[in-house]
Length: 329
Ligand code: PBG
Image (cartoon, rainbow, N blue to C red):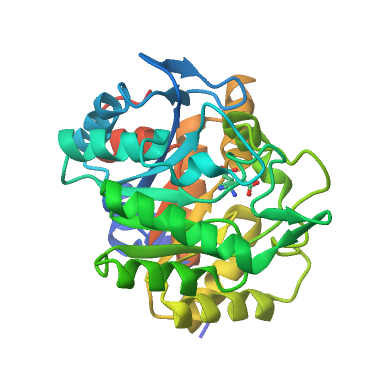
């Protein structure tokens, strides 16, 4: 069967027709909004490297969380910038740490909003690596013990989901054991399972002040040219170790990985539309080269169509406004 019996354009002939045959629909239920909290008071400081993103402090974060929840976004993802850094990142598991206090503030103000916390050392260590450094190398197993301590401290403060982003081997197992052993068996783990060493994290590293002081992250984050099977192995291991949700990161340059993971695994799949992807759209729109709203919707629809059902994006509030028919911005 072919032309003229088949005319592909028939089903594109009007907006109603296109809506009827459409398959991928974005929903506010898919969205996770990342937030940055830093030591200080009364802060809502614009982040230079990330347009329309801010540094909040623990006393201002609840107001922002309320706004996020009012847009019906189900979850925020918290990143912390401590007042002081040291070689082991000890502020990362401090009971009165910036993230721990922020979790309590958010949970007090908006208990129904899910709080996901980034579990990593890079913003807390003076060398900026995601793990402990021994003889110039990142020391895997002792790092896992600290990551479990961080995750537990977040759970104790009230986090619903902990999200290890460090890419150490075995960290999901350490975290799952620490949670189970301390009465937090219902705290979920969303692992950054297939996380690539990526140039797209540039704006975030300025925002989180987490650029490594020496070397790079290539001995722990995945190589972008590695086989897709390596990504599947990373994801399978994390699921086996106790991850409830797995993530592919970045999203746009890794849609093939998202697609494969969706075919292979049944658990919820998150994709992180990272800072560099965000700023490519923002800066092109600011330069008058792209329509920001249309580009954003197209990008996020593609990530969902590839198979992700959780979209972590700095565009979350804007998209929620579009989906709820409110003006963007
Ligand atoms: C920390 C972490 C990074 C991101 C999330 N968690 C940076 C990195 O690994 O260097 C990047 C997020 C983004 O670019 O939006 N390990």
